[in-house]
Length: 344
Image 1 (spheres, helix red, strand yellow):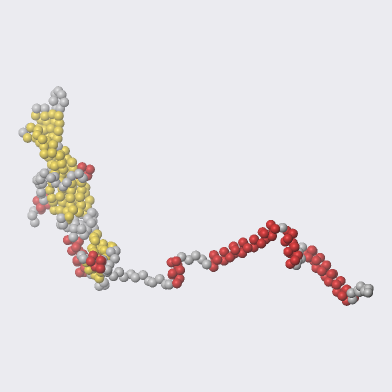
Image 2 (cartoon, rainbow, N blue to C red):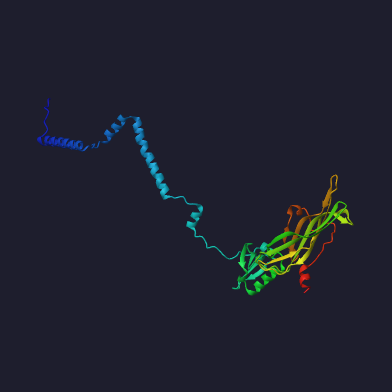
């Protein structure tokens, strides 16, 4: 049975014609504006397949790297690096520092023997050792934590201040004294005798000594001792030259130092040392000569039987010597200050 192909109704035909016209107009407008019309998902897949595997690979990986980089940046901004100390401070507030001295432990208590109880004008007491004094200041070491401080003596009450002043006078190590010396060798006198082409000469040499106190503490009750060191190589007896007592001989004295304030200076001259010499000048042949010589002067200052200052005019040689030679040499002891002003 044959069936004739039926034509679409007039309304449907008009609708199809209208849709084709609208699509054509839309495509035309995209072309005029330079836009690319959206395409369906199947068309996009077909386009990617036509581009090849390399292009697909680059398009799939690039967005992934970009996303990972963006995430890393978000982590850096959102989670800054915090040290452990900062983290603890965020979680727990730091306590205020304790300025009070720590409590004494048994070992510190045992070490506190010989410490002083120091009290300031406000009545606050502290256990401390007196280390040294300089001028109107004193260095102390606190027993509680062994910390050292330099404080003015005037900060303490009257009783404590009197104790500190007594300690300065009685303890030889309380003050680190600084004394300055100016020493000059000086010619005193000489005599000469010529007999049988031989000349005998006796020359006297001494020292002028000046000492200054450049410590801001007074120097009270000190003594000064000096030794003039010389080589006694010859002696002349009745115009005859005989051997002397040898090298490294010492002679000197002890003097009392008057009270010296800051920048005070004392000065004195030592008794002279006699040096013998002789010279033989024959008319023919080689002559002969010999004589004594001075090595230098060695000075020590003592306070409460402790050496607080020392001076050596020739330290290279004197560093190998001992104070007073070991032969039991008699040292001349004189007190020029008492001789000048009397025993009183």
